[in-house]
Length: 238
Ligand SMILES: [Zn+2]
Image 1 (tube, rainbow, N blue to C red):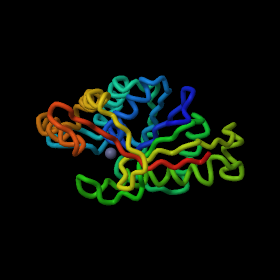
Image 2: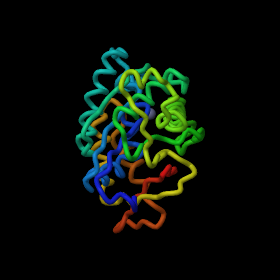
Image 3: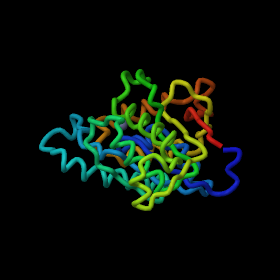
Image 4: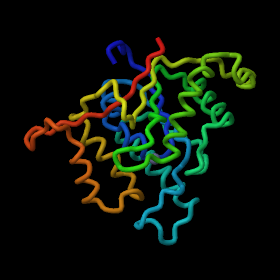
């Protein structure tokens, strides 16, 4: 962030609606407040994200539509300028060549300075085993950035479509067990919570959720002065 002297174009590519807010929403809100431009690209619409509160009489199509709306509402709270969906089927993401081409197209289309995704190496997360879609999303984004997005020899059909090579200058991997950057997000933590609360279909027990979010405060926090951080593995390309 030290060299972000002008407003940066920030593209967030993650698997599901609610991933941006849960993984790094407070950091995104902080960046938005600082004048940076943020766009979301979600790979699925989270159409299998059922819980006991949404299971009855719900179809995947209906849930997909609900989750589009919830994601746009949450993004508005964060200060995101645009939200896009690829609507790949939830739960079946594989970091294959087809998806890599699609992500290279997205990177070349939006031409971000900063790309945000999640760490593909996180198999065991704080809450148990990490979702395979999260791992696949992180993997395909890393694979798309290097060596494909900035190299015209990769996916020449995209050149024909008009998508010329583009290389982001930094990748920020959220949901990591190997952080090299910790962002103090105490100020925007309440915004993160407000944004997550827009994902109503995903919150079965509000009290439990609020308790869980409170428990995320740093170890040096006190009741009078709680402090919150979000962690990233950052890779700089230039
Ligand atoms: Zn997810």
